[in-house]
Amino acid sequence: MKLYYAPGTCAVAVWIALDWAGADFEVERVVLGSDEYKKINPLGAVPALDTGDGKIKTQAGAILSYVADKYPEADLGAYDNIEDEFLFNEITAFISGDYHPAFWPMFGPQKYTTSTDEKDLEKVKEASFKSIDKVASRLDQMLDGREHVYKNKRTVLDAYAYILSRWLKNTPKSWKEYPNLNKFMQTLENDENVQNIIKKSVE
Ligand SMILES: N[C@@H](CCC(=O)N[C@@H](CS)C(=O)NCC(=O)O)C(=O)O
Image (cartoon, rainbow, N blue to C red; front, top):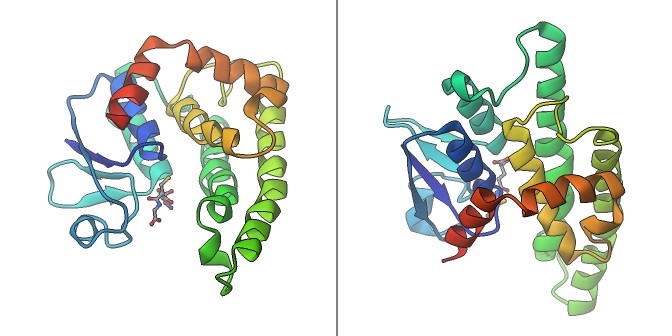
């Protein structure tokens, strides 16, 4: 199995999840949007996972769910009943569909305006800070009274929320300013395995 990744991206969450699952996998660093990588994922985005069946898997939320299902002994997914599975899918959709996209204008302001003026690009970034604060506040609320994103257990969603929340350091409000998120982040910041993966991913 091979994970395609780029440093600092949501693909590193998949790397952590595969590690937690005890999976046998290799990683390949790619250049986002390059012609070469578009042969793997036509959208040029990471993550992409090659599980060897001739079909490349994409979309972080779907891949993380796949990892949880493929390695049940690692117990990284939802509890087995319809309400708990719904909650897991709801949180996944929040992270993929609300949390992650809130950061896009900050990382790529040129995609959100036809202007090339630096001041206009800065304004797009500034506008994103409000949306980012909204979703980060929601995540903080979800973490109230618990150590994990999903209920009381470690799941692949912890890796997902952790990697994306590290991006808050590029906004005026770091994750330290969201009390529950801060506690959650500290736990993963102190996790040696997680930090080793982050180090390896930038090498
Ligand atoms: N919907 C995709 C979005 C993936 C995505 O935006 N990945 C970012 C890195 S975190 C990326 O590769 N951006 C480069 C690009 O889209 O060109 C998913 O959830 O996996």
